[in-house]
Length: 247
Image (tube, rainbow, N blue to C red):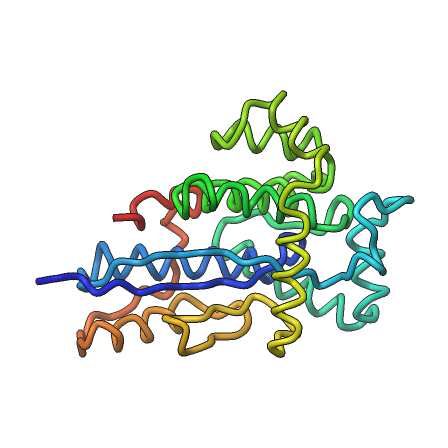
């Protein structure tokens, strides 16, 4: 049976905890659909940039650095931040992914530039490992993802550049205009929050949805009414191994 190509465009911000969760859930759904349901689908995924915090509010080299807790408390209000922190904490425990609000918040432009570079060089096979590493650095290791040293390490780790070449590239403004334009375009098209997953350019799924939501969508796209019971958790799947999804 021929496999139908499904194109996914995921608009996200690399400082967004909900985007990290959404990515994990999407990957889990894709893996389940491929390995368990054997759906006749293959996926082409592109991640597109968005800035929850405009550069006018938080410049790329924002000084002094602001802790995540302080920043999100100020942005959302202390009560809303507390709820968000508790919700993410419960998800992290269930999935075995140690997210935390340690560390600082920085403008995401540099990281988005490198994400676009990865996509232009190697498509999703290079962009996905980069994004996984950036989210891990930001939300698990409490690293500053605007820091050139941090980003150059990630670039070398996933094979975009050598560390020295990555440092040199990050000190240029290559792809900055493209990132700015793509962020502006998203805003102009009514995007106010992320993640937002656009399927085949027709349907939009907003927010960090559970893997079950994506599985039900993909089953419909495959034209199947498979009765397989969906597992209650995908904690056994490793979100750091996207390669099985890319076939």
